[in-house]
Length: 244
Image (cartoon, rainbow, N blue to C red):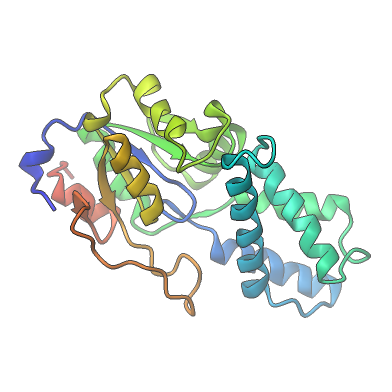
């Protein structure tokens, strides 16, 4: 890992959003609890959400591998939700409008407690942008609803691909106007940072131990190849000497 002086050339920061900037686990559980109460169901929404994410990732990987055509992430989530509803025998309990409303939870996620303060400081330090796999409309709604202070919104939809495909990281270069080595990719997912590093970006890992809930154990260990390991966005701002 490097010190702040060695990151003096960083002019822009690109942030993963779902999981890194916002918590999706608790909002899904809240939405699920409301459905259970209204419908008199006993769905385990922690397990349901894990299955939902697995199907979403599998569909994106199929797109990247060329096994299926590109599809916006909100449509992938909706398609996966339909599959889960069928698998769990809930087809007669959740109609199309109710599934649409549940699917919209991905645009109404909660900012992590450190996110707004940290992003506000980092935005004073350099240009800040999202770089999310989600669609443009979804991320714009999410950023607005969560009050995340970004300078720009970029998503994989603009490249018609998904991270970790290089074309998505190229968006940051094309739209932010800086070389890869002048852009710091911030994420809580190592696969994302590995791809960004291979593309030539600097990397900052911010662990989110509760991303998948209190019973999960995501890999949040430091790696020697990270440029920065920060415990929060506030810690990241401190490490970059971004003014409070």
